[in-house]
Image (cartoon, helix red, strand yellow):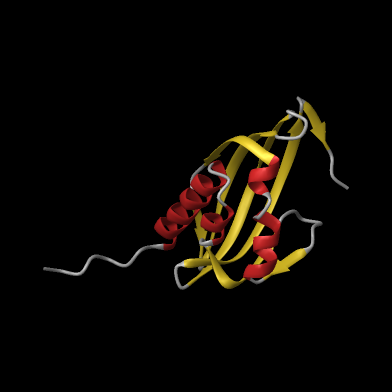
Length: 136
């Protein structure tokens, strides 16, 4: 019996993005948190606050099931640079409170360490109810 080849960053990135997408679609914050290292850094948007560590990242995602329903997630090809990977993504959902449809398209840039995401930066653009939303 031979050992299999170690997982490449591209394979790792695909596995982590797919796990994140499945967890987001199920609005399962705990499963989503499982792709992050305990001391990971998460930046939700270019001008957003930097969240560091599991408690802060959990705080961001924990109310997902109360605010989003009918979530659909898709991602594109994984691009690699050293220990970093990037991928385009789209996520669509319905706001539970208002019923508005939201679609976000963007990119995620992730650094990896020990098989998990140690840093994630999202850059995205939203449409709510068919209208563009410009965050300032």
